[in-house]
Amino acid sequence: MSPTIPFRGGWLAAGIGLLLLFPLSSPNAFFLDVFTTGFLLAAFAASWDVVGGVAGQITLGHALPFGAATYACALLTSLAGWPLPLAVAAAILLAAAVGAGAGALSAPLSGTFVALLTLALGEIAHEAAVGNSFFSGPGGYAWGGEGGIPVLLPWRDALPFASYYGALCFLCLASFAMLRFSRSGTGLILRAVAGSPITAQASGVPIARFKRLAFAVGSAFAGAAGAGFAIHVGRATAADLSLELSFQAATFAAVGGRGTIVGPIVAALVLHALFQGLSLPPSARVLLYALTLLVALRFFPGGVVGTVRELSSRLRGKEGARHSRRRSRPGEGTR
Image (cartoon, rainbow, N blue to C red; front, side, top):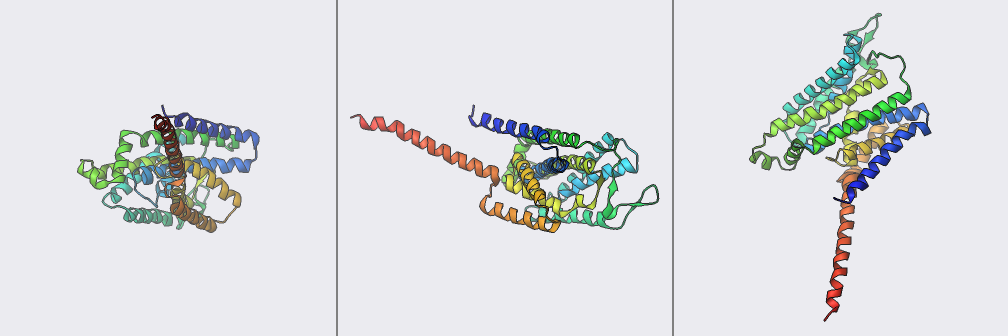
């Protein structure tokens, strides 16, 4: 057994333990809200990593399935009167379908063209949501546009503790599922397609089908995060489809380490808490995310996780070389 496994497991258990104890040490509602949103954004960043890291399909429109799920929750509960669990399930299915559609359109493309296509799809949806109000709700007022659409919840006011622990539980379950998927046989095939599509196609791998699958799976998890976000804030708005949200996910993945799932989660939690603490306006946040992304790509191309792995492998290599030299010395001295 590798000695690094219990080490990693210990750090993971310590991190989860600290997050579980945090509300007890800081009952401030603002900090609880920051971390609750951070948990949902961390799951969203990990879902981007399924598409952009594991499958290698760089998408700049990942807010599309996220926003589709938030709007589905709002419309199905407020207009159609669906129960919340049924609306959440339908929202996740819709997000997966949206992702599969985007994957089908981008399957013949690669590289920058995938990023441009997904960017265009996301911006079309965002502009449609920002436009004039398109639903007339009860009471004579309009829904849609900048004001968004409310989510009809079965409770009046959720306790901050309940929202915090609910989001944390969701993050743990979603992270476990995404890690299992990335390490499954399908995940290995997606990594092979990302590494060398020509070799994978020559080996008989249906590349287009696996690209669609990656988009559908990643979008389903993004939809689950979007549904949780809509429940947390109580409404769906055009910001749920914004380029800033898509850019956040890509930045978190680049900083944390693409293809690792865990790296984007850690980066999302740290950077979101940091930027929220700075109380920056949206335009300044986008600029700061861009600068962070440039620094990460320039100095840490493998992300934090990749850099740590590289350093640890170098240290193990040096230790191995020292042990080999020590073993060779007694033999050299005996003549």
